[in-house]
Amino acid sequence: MTTVAREIAGGGFVRQPNRFTDRITADGSSGYLAEPGRYRLIVSYACPWAQRTLIVRRLLGLEEVISVAVVDPIRDERGWRFPEPDPVTGATFLSELYLARDPSYEGRYTVPCVWDGVTQRLVTNDFPAITITMETEFAAYHREGAPDLYPERLRPEIDELNERVYHTVNNGVYKAGFATAQEPYDKAVDALFETLDMLEERLVGRRYLFGDRPTEADVRLYPTLARFDAVYYSHFKCNLRRLVDYPNLWAYARDLYSIAAFGETTNFDHIKRHYYMTQRNVNPSGVVPKGPIMDWDAPHARDRLVTS
Image 1 (cartoon, helix red, strand yellow):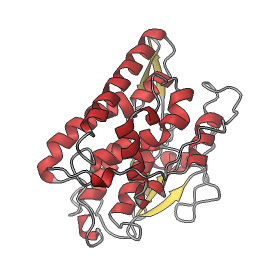
Image 2 (cartoon, helix red, strand yellow):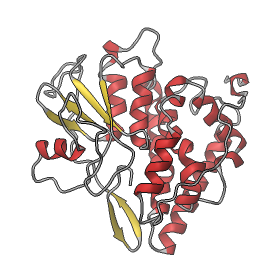
Image 3 (cartoon, helix red, strand yellow):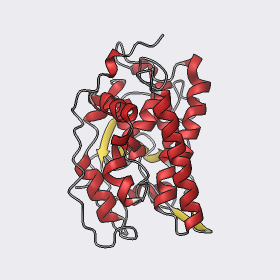
Image 4 (spheres, helix red, strand yellow):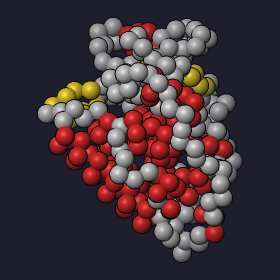
């Protein structure tokens, strides 16, 4: 399961809280100074929460500021594994870094997380905060002309939309997929498609969720859309409608995919192998489906929209 720990209460799904929530700050007042070469971002291309961080890192031009280590998409009972020992941290399994920070840790070892090369410890696995940190605390290191993904004037609105999208879409697909009783499954699926219907209408007259430029809200929504037809529709039983059945959402997703930071961090091979081969409780055979066939490079025409 991608960054998931489960507790079943009445057949419902509860996500594991993020254990490490230290902050990296521009002035270093937190004890962790935002500076080049100090931090290592650990990700999986399969994980939607991790893809967010890769998108933001690329959009803001932080590739030379924050290094990246990518784990293997196939995970077993030992957790995420590096294809070969990570040359920066020395770890073979992500669990080693979690236990180095807290030997008593008993939760799942999740991505994304950030390793500090100075203190030799994990700083955070608090995925909602990692992208915000890159957008705000690392501002001095953004490339020239980098987009403002979290504009101050829009933050309350972005936060409000992100909250709904998180609970009903990003995490909503997991609530459906890991439900073990009918009522919580039905509730999750209904909420998921109510929000997708709302987003379809929202995108009628605007190119992105907040106008003519991508923001943190688009970064958070896109990874779920990218996995929807390939994984969530069938594997997680989110099958009222496909992404391709939503004209605006599907064109919007292709529009984002055409941006290198989004498209080049979307690895469908890793995504499908991880979900179908790792989550044997949902897919006992481990067989990976060949489809669906989707033309992510088809013209989207979203650039013709003019937001007043």
